[in-house]
Image (cartoon, rainbow, N blue to C red; front, top):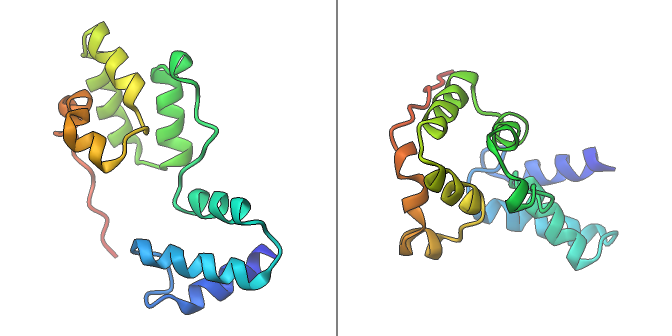
Length: 133
């Protein structure tokens, strides 16, 4: 069933894979047409399709190991990028680590722009590898 949904969705996308937020609205309409999920289940499916999950570790249990797990398993970042992030994290003061932990993957655009970026300022210099076809 999931193959049928994904096939129908990607067939309707210009590039064959999601590249913008409106692509997820196409997924919403595909799921609604199939008439097998509730609106709440559709919302959760789209949330997961974007690579986001509600079942994140609780803030008080979030630590570098759980952050690293998210970077590897959910975000699928390259190992050298993860190593840079872990190294940067380990160089933070305890207060800054706690601030980072409390804000990791919790911001809206508005809260990030308002001052939420401060928890992440030390990570702005992490270099992502460019992948080319």
